Image (cartoon, rainbow, N blue to C red; front, side):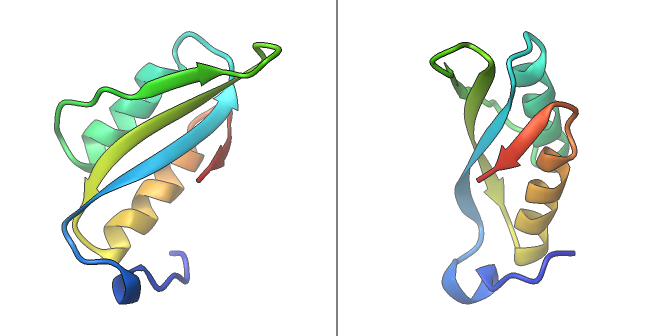
Length: 88
């Protein structure tokens, strides 16, 4: 896992925003939502913004995390999605 201090600076549960940046692909949003659903089932309404040249999408999604390990797993699993370049 990641070596973070989320448990020292956050209270849980917490609705945490994740920004996923990846290649522009019509299925990227669906794949991000699928990972979010697997991590914490719920109704997700992510926002999407295309880069100025349309090469990348920036997807912001809020996931309710319940622990330090849960937030670390969210970062890891979102980053593992094919085409994802960064998770912030």
